[in-house]
Amino acid sequence: MRGVADILRHAREKGLRIATAESCTGGMVAVSLTDMPGSSDVFERGFVTYSNAAKRDMLGVRADTLEAHGAVSEQVAREMAYGACAHSGANIAVSITGIAGPGGSEFKPEGRVCFGLTRHGTTTTQTLEFGALGRDAVRRAARDHALDMLLPAVLQSDS
Image 1 (cartoon, one colour):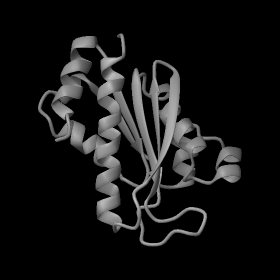
Image 2 (cartoon, helix red, strand yellow; image 1 turned 45 degrees about the horizontal axis):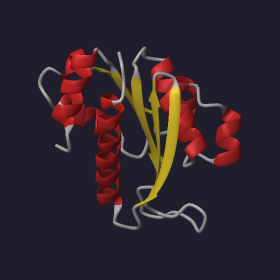
Image 3 (tube, helix red, strand yellow; image 1 turned 180 degrees about the vertical axis):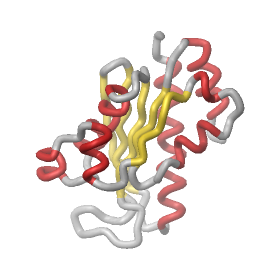
Image 4 (cartoon, helix red, strand yellow; image 1 turned 60 degrees about the vertical axis):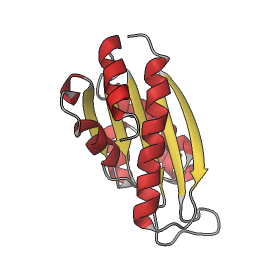
């Protein structure tokens, strides 16, 4: 699936460890990575932090960040990815927080998903608008995008 074998192979060759921090996908990225035999030498751990309390407690997302920007924001995605590395010892972490649906609001519509990627202490973020595709389709699209983010991150990394 979507380059998972390549992600794991290159991470293994470089001695990298990967962590995930997932909200709206509920662990789908971690499942994709661990579906491959031999993933245990690369995949460190996955955090499923669906609630704000879990984001704070497990990843160290600051309450004031959640208050100021809401859970579905690049600011929270940044803190989730950084926290996944900091709380796991992984070299690379990807985070996902979004509104899979149904529902949403004028300001945060269904299908909006924010991603974070931390690589060796540097974090980047992005937001994608998948649209009102339905809950399952948004979650699958978010999972696939997160996996697409991991391969170049692994390729550009030194152990």
